[in-house]
Length: 351
Image (spheres, helix red, strand yellow):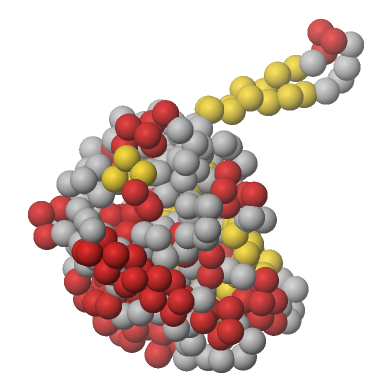
């Protein structure tokens, strides 16, 4: 009982420190988070788990770090709009010809309504929400050892309930904030020449993400939406059908952010509201599960941070290069599906 009381006290202190978020949004430069090593221990989870810190009396949190997108953060992000130019970040749903992991490919059926006496059309579509541009919800991937999802949701409960579903994001008004593109691919080509294969397990270290930000002259702030361009979509756009099949269906390797302790600490210290990229899994895939540094486990499970995957960042990269700025106002309207596990992002960058 004494240890339980001590744990509650630690959690209460951490929540009090997080409550400073509201104050910092009035003009202070930083959120006042505990360091990752000072977070209260959660049984069965690694040090650095945020479970409970966003809870409110009588309400168990289901949106994680999206809580950082407060009205004042969104209002400040809107100051990124100057030219009014806007770019859609969703890849066409039909693009992944050969989905991996046994997933079904996109299908569309156009329905002629002539039999009803109208010159009109409907259409019906089938999508696996993991087979194209997507958000991963907080019930997509569990901490594999404990089979637990964000904020203590068990796998059995996740299967039969709507807890942690994407509808929670929709009910709070979607995802709206400041997006920051880390155009690693453009930086790499200018600094080093030909980039690594997008369908190899090349790891992009946090130190290079930091170097690209400096190269671009881009700063981040807590509550930003981090977006990393690695070259996967560009590779797919120019690959032959045979190359696509080999790279996406027959091969389970993909470029991505390095899965290690340094990356986990870098991501935590930046306190992003969400992350996204143009590759299959945001992180290098497959992750080294035996090390404990799988980013899906840290982002989705430990912190409740949505992961966007296979976003089309090609037009965005060109606009950023032309404007010489890599931050923008961003909106995302996921499908409002009760208990949704994934969704096309419906993401737009506005300059």
